[in-house]
View 1 (tube, rainbow, N blue to C red):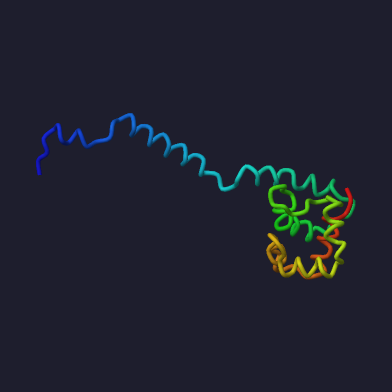
View 2 (tube, one colour):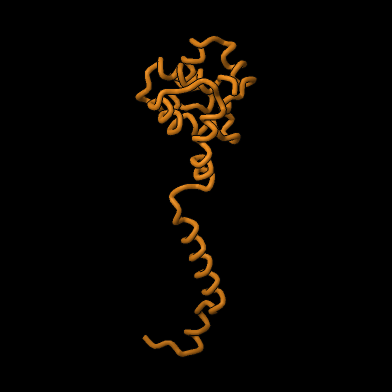
Length: 138
């Protein structure tokens, strides 16, 4: 089918709009190349230093790994609403209900916290140790 030149060019997008779309697509492509958010990089870099200095209570290497992979994802960020590591005031309020109630909330989930803090392989004793670590004074 033949289209006269004036009809064909009238239906095309101007070159400046195409360039804008291409630039926008390219920018989105570049920003989506990273598999981690900037927050995660910051948290990973500071996680080890903060976990060592924030508490006099020490964890075994196994529990330290569990803490870094599960607990710290929420308990190191203000935006999650989770009580932060070493925030004795927040932890005192939580633990005022007793360790049994706190452990039950950890095991079953409470508020925004997922069940077991997503550490499904953790035993209740390990979770209690992690609670004690996070709630201990710096």
